[in-house]
Length: 170
Image (tube, rainbow, N blue to C red; front, side, top):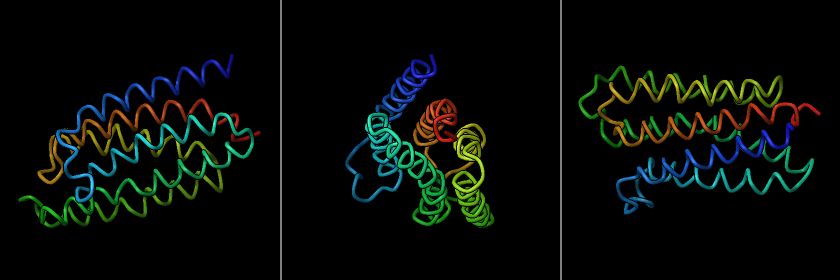
């Protein structure tokens, strides 16, 4: 039953990621736009998670580390976006808010590896539900398509990873 639940959650994460990828307005910036690159990484993450499902215990270890890298890297997109847009008219204090997110999410990633995998789940889901939602309405340097796409990916990934916590603990 747990295995079926995990496969269903992975299918949901893949579907939400597919919707997010469809929301990318142009793939022309794949080499220069950090937000497009983040969406490519999100798609790659689904592929990695699919492959790790077939690798047994080695796959479980890879999956958990990949989730931690994913979580720790999230704030980089926002920092780079602020720097490229020079804030997009936002007050410079928002760069400090974005920079503050880096140790917070990196700390959650490390805690997810060292203490409890629930830190990974909570960090990824919270990023989508709180960070992305806030940026959707309030950050001129983050386009709405990215905030929406990132929210979809984070929620889907958070749901899937929640089903994997028992496997990570075994």
